Image (cartoon, rainbow, N blue to C red; front, side, top):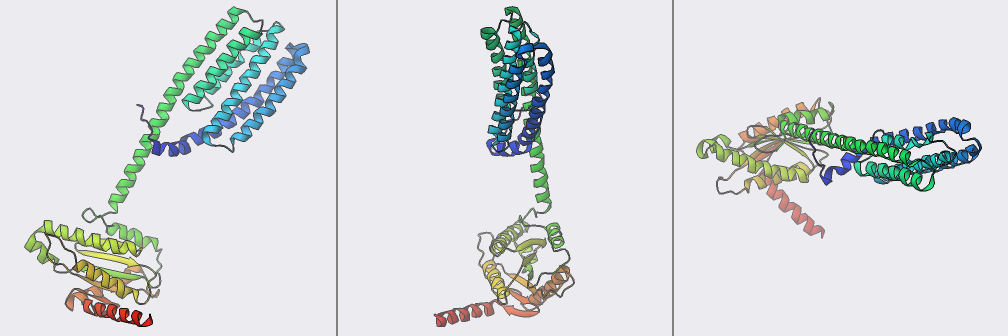
Length: 385
């Protein structure tokens, strides 16, 4: 799999999805490895003789320190946690090298193979990032080489041979981690792209291609969200562009599409401000839900829609109007579908009575009446002041 660098904006997600589980495993494996190292106390007892007590104290003290560092790593950032575990491994290798020096002074060279176990563990089960793994491997290798070269009586040939073997393991480990990191990052990026594609496809399936509004399928999803219940005082509106067929026939379908897009944008702006829901129901029809309305609210929102649609101006468009059928729910209805049917019937009445008007709960309200209501409201507010 080719390497796909992770952009900075996805690094946090990568750490959460990939690095965090790796860290948990690394902490567990490190803990198990430290306790398994106590098995070597049996060989210490039989092989080191007088040095056993000394080595036992070193191992126990080191164990306590390692456990403390691992505990601290649970309460730090991801980067610092890997540093803590890396520190434990480097110190643990230091203990191994120290015991190997003590054993070498006693004529035993069998204690010098522990470093390769640290190197192998670092590049496999630890699953740390490449830089951290390389640092741990190099420190472990240098600790062995310098420790035995400067402080032990180990034969130079043995040190050179072990240094070559440990170095080869280190090099192979680096290559394996590079391959693993390329796979992890590439797999993460592909999975992320797949999620984006799925979300895009899902959004497109719920979106009307022309207007960008939710479509009829999105309306069905919205109705499902109500779970069969009808909210009290929800304003349900059916809207239809007046004389749209005539506009299409006279100006062409391209102009009709522009008109629908302009009207959709106007409606969406209003609905978003009112925290409502809007969809293109089909053709030149739209549905709007405004939940938790007040008594005067349906008139006000309807007035705003009528006036703003009528005020749309574009070079390619003639003057346009819209008719509205509205219904305010009472929570007595059997379903939202029933409310839509009532609003649709009110829309038909608005059309029959001259268009460019709204019928709410089967009561006609013309745009001029809305303007009069606004004037009365303004006068009342002035009198109150």
